[in-house]
Length: 488
Image 1 (cartoon, helix red, strand yellow):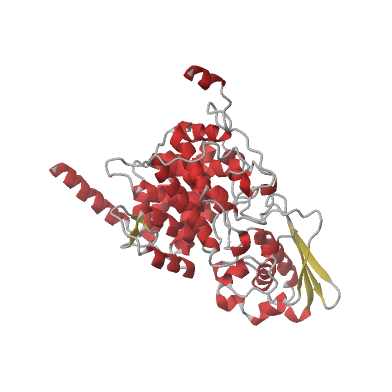
Image 2: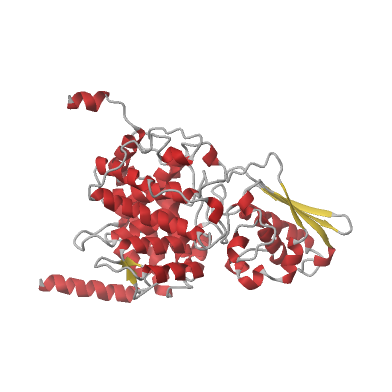
């Protein structure tokens, strides 16, 4: 009877996912997947470290201090403050998304921020005698990324920029859960239960975009995925067909059409087929097309005006962008609203020539010259400009009082997966972000560790650097441990 059941029973999508999560191993990872995921890891650590300085991160850190545990994990950028793994994953996840500076994929989601804080926090919770290698971490991370990408492809509407749910709260929670299940080496049944439990933590409305609550979406995805895997490891059970049902993960999509995954024999990773976008400045990805087009227009406008924008000569500014309601903010009043405003980014890039972390500081959001430009800005939504990160474009047109119009269009910005950041520019972004929080030795230690991650025997070295400890302190720690082992 058991043999008949094994060979002839129809396999559920949930069962298939559980088999793949359980069955994938390090030999399945391709060189390109390893290289791309290491870039994602480095970038995510950098934006997370920078994000520790934000007001929203300070608030959730203060909140999380009420929890204590014998088992603790690193809070990035803090030398003498640790949290239980769940809350370390939460705080670090919030930090990653606190400025909307983290990577973005297609169909739309922020894939790394939901997964990396969870697997790093979990890796520190293992007994000291069971070391988690860099390759273990890479595999778990990529399983979490893969599950997100596959789930997004079960819906055609997910290919457009979302309107109702923020994707990391749905697929990010599931990806975090899958990654943690992999790191915990859960069996197939417990992998199924992990996905089922995680689904009951999934989902948050998009209405909280452009507020301090939006970063909590990524922090919760990291925390809840880790919690789901831990609960499943204790035998907690859920619906074994959670990915098959419209009332399961299908509840988040009106056109949900689940499919089984490819066989493990020669597994085709989605990250192998399509890279992620890595941002050059902290704002909604759609605004990056606007920034590049506006910067190009500015170069044409200032050719004969001593590099100063001729504000008094500008009659109106037209932005041809896709219709994305939550990024249509004509007069943003906070940094979070400014990060989600086509108009703000266009006018800021026109005024200053480029965008940076400082562009969203309060004094820059409220500068009079920028407000003047905003008052002259209008949006248009051409019917061919679809709200998809794979196909949208932006055209910026500035009409002068003399009747002349200066225009430029961006189809692919620098940092998009079709035009990825060069290695040196990725490193510059990381160093700029991380050096605001960590000493130079720790920053260099993270770069070296991430680039060599598949050969690292004990990935706790990464957490040591993330806390701000130097290589010297790490060496002393190892020496002390070896002496203790020798005495034992």
